[in-house]
Image 1 (cartoon, rainbow, N blue to C red):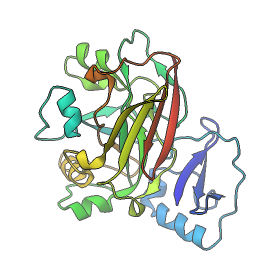
Image 2: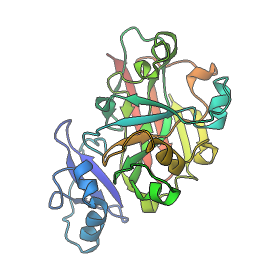
Image 3: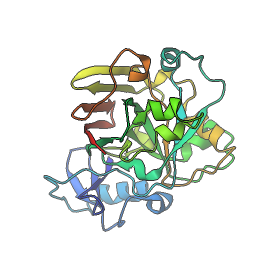
Image 4: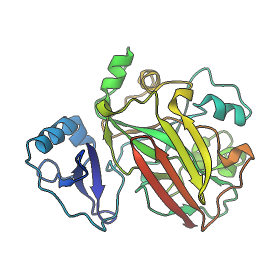
Length: 282
């Protein structure tokens, strides 16, 4: 089962895709897929309605795919969480999770255009496993408790402007992370009980050429460990997004050129779907 939000920007409606590929209208269950829906056991209610045959099949041909979660309260991100990516960045794997934030309004649909910021010289791609929180995480003590706080997973592109992030930031990474359109998300929210976050292949391409090809096994800190750690310092709420870090193969490594208007990014995570963006100008 996959949860989807389809429609024009600002007019997205909730849907669910069944295992047989049919898409069903979810509006009898909820007006949108948001934190309130997830907190009210929305994933289980959607599954029960689908299995009971209570959701009508929908014709969604030609509809834009929106981000699978509406209005996230926070987008929490983890830096250098893959051992090989830390190495290509010239750093040792971190002893503690490196945390930064993206403005929630960076979240756009998985196939929406990404805008190269004005003055940008080093716009970069980052395929990441996104965690969508479904239950409040506050002072979590065990991995089991941490995983129980997750509603589902999605593909995320943590687009970054490295000059803003590193050279012009004074250590404030978020300056290179918060430009408009800098977090394509989706195509779908896949329920947590259908995903093994510790063994997922991640890939990215630029203009059809492979850039990243890794697996979440290379994570320094697992998804459960990240939620446990973060919950000691902040409260994660339903609908929040956690970007869990990117593997090696980004432009920051010096192996590839940075992005320019007209380029195309493609990203894929095993079992979670594929997204594609064209670069435009801000």
